[in-house]
Image 1 (spheres, rainbow, N blue to C red):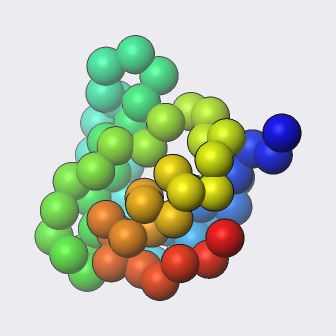
Image 2 (cartoon, one colour; image 1 turned 90 degrees about the vertical axis):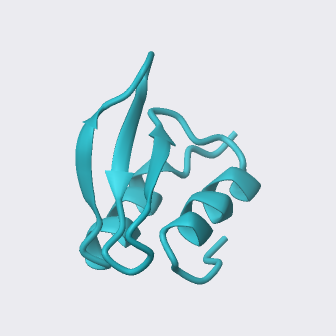
Length: 64
């Protein structure tokens, strides 16, 4: 199984998204300057659908 976290984090940082705080469990709470929303990012992203959903919440196009 692929782990999409490294690529998702790279795309988020390129879009100037940033970590706000540590969430519950192994999640981080990120903020997007595009949508001005907070969204969770898991420490392991095993599904391309989850990876694309995170990008959508950040206001970015699908990548996977």
